[in-house]
Length: 182
Image (tube, rainbow, N blue to C red; front, side, top):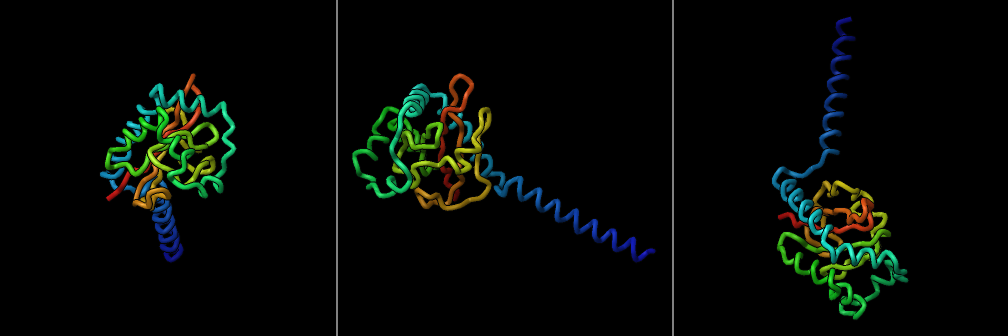
């Protein structure tokens, strides 16, 4: 009987350790300093998402058919006139100005389908609809990745951060960045 009790305690102990390790891993692997930095940039994105030029650019993009996909986009040179037009638009200029912050690797604006609208540089991916930076950015809260990884556009060790662009209480697009982690 005592042997059975000891075995039960051992199993419960192992199970509790496993559950604790899984729950802490899913809560995020960022250290407090990095998490504070990410949270500060989420707040900046929330403010930038309310900028009239940002909202206007997303609304305009949502009314257009882009005739672009990731394969076509990838084949385009970063100095192509069409690519540069995303940076030279009113919203693109604003995002480029905001991206002068050395903690940011990039700053992009996306429409309701995840298509690129404006940004500080040419993104590696034109449409990010299936990526968490787009799909998990919900009204009232931002999103961030939980692990430091090389950014697809800059190749710098970063945390992806995004915030929805809202109009009339509805998500119409997303603004997102990569916060560089040193």
